[in-house]
Image 1 (tube, rainbow, N blue to C red):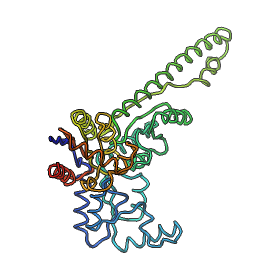
Image 2 (spheres, rainbow, N blue to C red):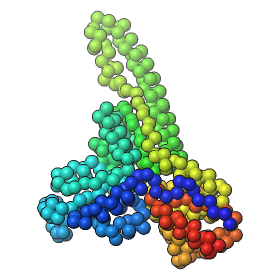
Image 3 (tube, one colour):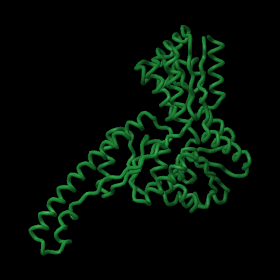
Length: 373
């Protein structure tokens, strides 16, 4: 049996940077309480290890308050007082946070360790710059993903998140309602490249259709203005052209920036390639990881026998749970049994891991396969 392991499996630069610096910070600051807003990265093994080393995970800033029964205002006041006294620090996770979070932390004089992925920080800067230039942002990605929530927070409300094709129509409606005519398209760094290109094409098609209508309307107005000018040539020119100015609609301008990170693109392309060569495909990573889920979707199209696991131990348990059950429409035990039987008769097995998957998790799966099969 041949095992083909993706060369791009495991930690990307942003994740490695966040995990390494978080570990160092906690180790070097034993005298203070260190919190992380949300999961540093989407991997249970990584977050459990960091928790054991002393990092505390919270979902929002109000959790810093010990007064659980207090009002929101009281909680914020208690948070400010308590954590100043306790010399607390807050880590911004790799996915980033909205602009308002940074402002709140600074107002409370809490120490900040910003471990947002550099690629995500670059997107924050881009959308801020384009908002100032009068653009409306079409943000392609998962609406409930922390990276998207963070980026949206830098758009000053001039943004629509596009998760599916129907959202494109909603985005255009918002654009028109706000009387704006410039669109800036960016993406979640871990979004599907295939879907991104598909959505961009639809956006371009809608803009082309819209602009064609504007051109036709302009020509119609020009003809009307000419007739008005001929019949009322003695009137002021501004009055003669008033009908056009009142009804004129500007053409839409478009700027697209593919902000899917290079590591994501290469990983997806390698998954596509490997999944076409093997009998079984194993995707290793957090079940709540966006980039891991997309690797699964890509592999599943080419290799029916594809599963997601977080660790090798899932092969020993009753089920290969959650994601695999959704796709197979079977209970976990049946999926597990079928997949393990398939491995026994396979000549080639492919392995790919998400960007938040530690190297040891990958090695453990490889060792398990070699030992058992």
